[in-house]
Amino acid sequence: MSSPMQLPKPSLPPTSTEIHTDALDLVEKCPEGIVFLDREWRITYANESARRISRIEPHHLNGPTHWEIYPATVGTRQEEVYRTSMEQRISLEHEFYYAPFDVWISLRTMPISTGIAVHYRDISRVRKAEARRDESARQLQQVFEVTTDAIVLLDRNYNLSFLNRRAKELLAPSGELLGRNLWAAFPEAVYEGSPYVETYRRAMEERLPGSFEAYYPEPLNVWLTIEVRPAEDGIIVFFRDVTEERAAAEELRRKTAEAERQAAEIETVYRTAPIGLALFDPVEFRYLRLNDRQAAFFGLKPEDVLGRTLTEMAPIPGLRELFEDVLAGTPVVNYPLEGELISHPGEHRYWTVNYFPVHAPDGSIQAISAASLEITQQKKAEHALIQSEKVAAVGRLASSISHEINNPLESVINLLYLISCDPNLSLDVKEYVELTQAEINRVSQIVTQTLRFHRQAVRPTLVTAAELIEPILNLYRGRLVNSEVKVQARFSTSTPVLCMENEIHQVLSNLIANAIDAMRQGGELLLRAHDTTDHATGKAGIRITVADTGHGMSRATQARIFEPFFTTKELNGTGLGLWISAGIVERHKGRLSVRSSQEPRHSGTVFHLFLPLAES
Image (cartoon, rainbow, N blue to C red; front, side):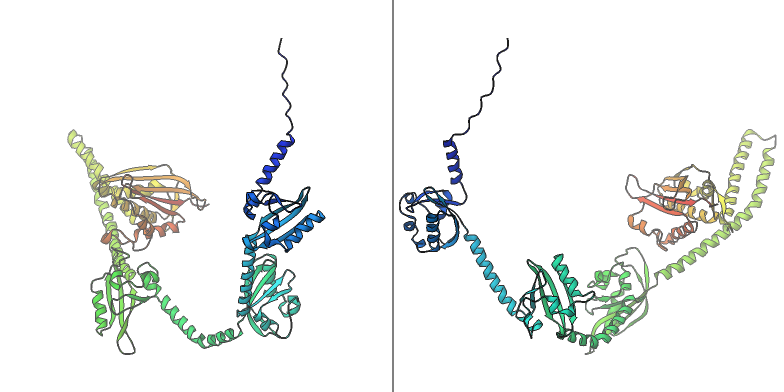
């Protein structure tokens, strides 16, 4: 049989003693002072805050009267409030300053059964802050009165609530404006698109500051610079009369306009001149001034060159001596200068230069002027033309030789065939004859491909990737073997593209030749072709990849490889191969891209050639 269920005991309400204790504890810890005064004006109770604020000692309780403890309160408004509250049994509020303690007190009296209770707090900090604020306001008022700016305060209804001395002089010389509506007092400020209306309303309604300059006609007839700032009760407006300043500025503008125009024209001609212009000091030959073209020689901005010496930027032998000749009184005219600049080491460049002294009024040389015309491209073009003529001559010679070799080759091939048909040949001799036939056939193929490679096409033809690449591999087979370069060719497409075959041969020949040059110590040449779609244009086509495991290219080199005359092969290159190749690919509506790495473990370069399919 289960035991009877135990019911919880009901909690007992707190006793009156407990409530009284809690109430006293709450009063004791109250952050404001609380004091009980009996009808004989004795202090019967003071909480902790009251004891601290009013400096109440234990012997003050139930002892001397309030007026005996605080004699400075006798005859004051505080005594009147206390006695009125005690006699009429009403609550009253009062603020007073008690000098002996240097405190401001805010209090409220409340009648209780034994007398009155006083609830109060120390407001000294608030009062002192208000005093400081009032003093600041007074000082600010003084500043407003002596400032040369006119200052006006507008309330929320655009009524003028304050004008300083200067505002009264400027805006109200013949009448009182205080309390008047701004727009009624100055109707000429109200018109379509008025900056007065727009700026004032933006500050008043959106609380955004603003400034503007405007002319106000009759009766003011002045130009004003106006700043508007949102204030607590409206906006504050600062006026400044700039009529005289504007007149003086206009006069100055008229006097200097022609000089400025001429200076601007000279400066424009100077900065945009197609030749490099510079000015040097006559002591250390430092750049005092230079135009954009002169700074472009170094690939810098003019401000990045100013202050640097001539020989620091252009360490060319004999250049300093030329400047010293100018200092000695001998100008340099149309002098051919060549060398390297510090910003482009390893790049040989050419200029025609003119250096002249700039004389001071006393006849001394105060600077040296320099005019430099760069002819590097002209020199390279001349060199490239010579190289191009040599290459064209070699091509024509190779084509002629190939054509002439064809006839005797056919005779040799026929004779070898007849010899191979002789039944009396021994097996060894027959093997030698077959080997000779194979090599002669290879020579014949090279001759045929050479003729085809140099023959100029007159119209585009359909050709596959394999048909484009294999003839070039045959031409470079000797270099590939001698350089110990292994070739991996894989063509995943047999789709023909419509192109100028000899031009694409030239592009692929450049890419493969560059790849071989990058693998002087051996490596792998990877050739791939597959169908694809160009992500930029959405056109279908084939992509031919030429990749090598050579030394790779730096980022700086990759950025310039398609520039004309840029080469890393020194005297062995013209710098035109990839530039011409890029132009050929562009004419075919294709794309030629590159990526390269110089990391030791996976260095090399990859070129991608995209050729679009012929459109219907």
